Amino acid sequence: MSFWHRILRAARFHPILAGISIGILLLLFTFVLDFVIGRYENQLSYFLRMVESSANIFGWFAIMGGYTFALLAWAHRKEAAISFYGAGNKVEKLKDSFDASLILGSQHAQTEWHLRHIKPKRVEVVWTPMVEEHTRTILQRFTDIEWLDSRQRSLENEDVYDIAIVKKHCMDLLRNMLFKYDADKICVDLTAGTALMTVAAFQAAEELGVTSLYLVGETIDGKRGRLIDNDKVDNPKEAKVVIVSDHRK
Image 1 (cartoon, rainbow, N blue to C red):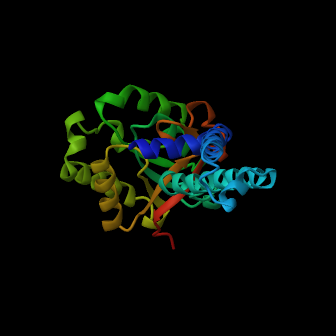
Image 2: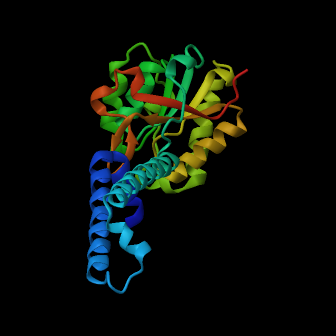
């Protein structure tokens, strides 16, 4: 993350502090300008000396306020563009859309939120030994959800960086779900996992005509951006659903 990006993010997350900081900097610039005019007033023209009048000082404060709000608005739009601000739909719009889900399961809050609010009847999780214990703990809480093939089948830790292995694994899990469910009633959750896992799972979903989606958390973290808070997974408003590729009928 660049230094300029960090400044924009700070302005987005702390607008009051950012506004005060920008105002102080512009005020200092005004004082410096006033000092220069006062020191060299004999050499300056009548027009420049007019800046010292109270009306012009008031004008400078108005300009400072305008610049402050303009910069904050620009920082907000810039942050929105890179943080999915305002993206996605409420989960209520997906009510009864999917009966089965394939989830990339490295983010525990995302997995639990998906199970609670998208409510599939069957789920398969792409997991590794690194997250096995926590994944099993989450799934055991949802005894009414089937968890068949991936219960015994996982990727090795090093496999998550091999797109061919991950894609084949996802294809196998999806094909087994297709024996029982129609393709338009299955979704693939691309939120978690490595970048290669996301690409592999998306390719598998596209080849089999399955909808893929992404969850955008509503909690803002200054370092990691938007995420789903572990303490808010029971809140349906804690995330929005972005349909990446829609194969629903």
